[in-house]
Length: 324
Image (cartoon, rainbow, N blue to C red; front, side):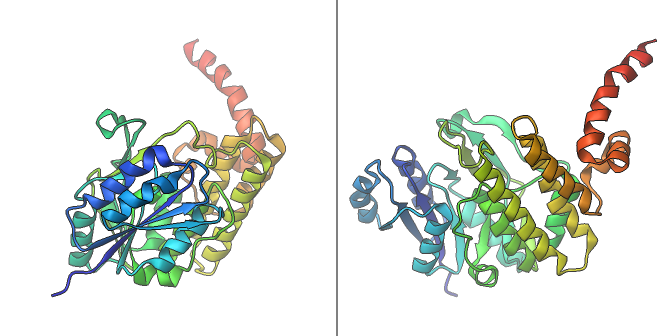
């Protein structure tokens, strides 16, 4: 029986220093057949100088006008021929057996989506930061569909990085293209659509992906009003999509995202934090914060913004009373 083709799509913008490692990790996959597609998103660091060497190894290389990583991924999808898709950012790395192991699991379980834990690293994966998401507190046997995975996001407070996924092309065709607007939550919004349509999801509890932490990794940081606004709009899009399901448990997922934005911006952008907190309060759904019963009571009584302030104000007093 003919083996399915897997396409590895690598968008790159000014990542010449890291791109060789990413491409090598794709080419060194134990699984064959595979196609590797590099899309240079208008880089100004001479990334294209690497193209001849890549192309000699069978990599398809393209240069396009700068439009953001999501736009570059869409271009890569249009050029791809694979039955399965691995998205790989130019500064990340996948383990040699990642695709082989995930694909075998997917075929055995008839799954259309799979994910794995990852490690953070800075220079080499041999010096990986020992902070990894083994999902030790998650019972993956209970997560069978994409919607159940989103409920778990909201109720158990976790997430999955882009590098961790392997996706069936048929599922991507249902989900549609990445939103080309530059947004710190572009992967969250996109994979929410993927999960919305995923009938069978499976996890391999083995570290097979590596996410590089770089000094220039600023797009994902909510350090400007446009980035906060873009993320906020993506949360509303996810909420609108999930409202079509009439399952209130799903709303714990966008509720969590509004909470995370509140936490990340409350010190530097208090007005935008209040807006995020208001949306958290607006969504009448369960939350992982229910595991903190006293804090949860304050939030329900006074709202997230004021309830958090009051709770933190009273905590030292409670500690003092307990000592006495």
